[in-house]
Image (cartoon, rainbow, N blue to C red; front, side, top):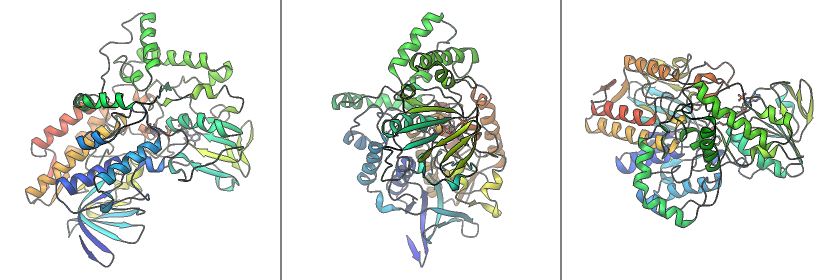
Length: 538
Ligand code: N01
């Protein structure tokens, strides 16, 4: 590192200290021997798991593959305690990784990036931060996550509310005490579905404001014994192989059967088995065509609706909870613990804001077209400006003064979701255009970190100065991403995958639907062919 007044110079700047940032710093520093600085807005490592401390926050992927697979040492030393670990345990895990790999000394915490600009003459990135220090480096790697820019809807009167309000993705570290309070929760995505059952246990009353009903499958969480975990570890090479070679980073592959091949009884028997097992396997492990064929999808959607009707005692509430306006899985499917039974509690009311929309927030509550709900606390479980939000809020400017927000005015454009033409030496871990959010994130993250590490090493070994995609390669990839997204049913929902949750955001399907295994192979071929589609300059 070189330092002059408020400018520090390094080889690599990594932004973010979540799963991606920690591994990227380790890879660049310890494997490649580069001088790396990590910048993180939070006060410690954890990323998503640092900020999302809302009640009920836990992982929807099972612990034994929602973790790093690159290190035998980490694997040997860490034991998960549950099938789906809660946020505190995942945060402890990431803190353990940061300590075990001695990563904290390479990070500046409480440091948000306010601008990142390509310095053309110096062939380097210049990064300004909230603390006033400016950092310069040849490489900029964004490890900012896909779901880290909180979306607090601009509902009229929001600032007049006299009670407390919180966004789930910016939850106070000291927690929130709901005891004896009337609480409004807006949003029934994965987060709201995890939070509502837990908030309902403490609150005097919980009003769940639902705009779109969601399909959720039980998690079937349970403690994991040491013996079970030791058994999984002894076979971990196979887990690693399956996750890496699978479509979505899970250690199981979709069944080759169509849902339409079987009689209704046979099919329902399979759904019952998957329902009893719980988790994402319901979508990925049952029938291959649930996300491809509407008729096949309907069979799963109706099975879930029947479960809702069987669990929720008030038939009118049950019907309001039944999704009918989008196919199952076309939005990111939530996984729950006791979500539907929560609506059988006397202290829980479902407020259907599709039928009677919110008109404003008042000093004492929320007004809809058919009434006023007096509350003490509002919980915004309203999601994120996904995928592009975390990148655009860093004010990134590339070659010739090109701002990323202008380049992406009509939707994100990238090559492989890894690099953007006009932004030399900037790498975007799980960027738009890569499989990212459609997969088990740690599996995708490891693939990106390793590819980026190898790419930087290739430049360093060859004494090359810059790398960026050609415009042609980028255009071809953007077209391929769009073509793949039109194949299945993903375009049939107003999802954050499409940016539909953010008013005014261009409606473009952002993640790559072609599958992680195909994508990994393509990235490998491109590198093996001398970084085909990239422009490398000496
Ligand atoms: O956000 P969401 P989330 N007025 O966007 C509603 C990941 N995750 O935080 O559907 C009223 O899914 C919105 O309604 P609608 C996971 O990838 C992972 O729940 O747009 N309502 C919806 O109900 C997930 O997909 C884990 O009509 C408004 C909700 O708010 C992603 O994070 C756990 C509104 C937002 O749902 C995001 O989930 C939890 C408005 N103005 C989450 N604006 C893990 O397991 C939005 N809504 C790791």
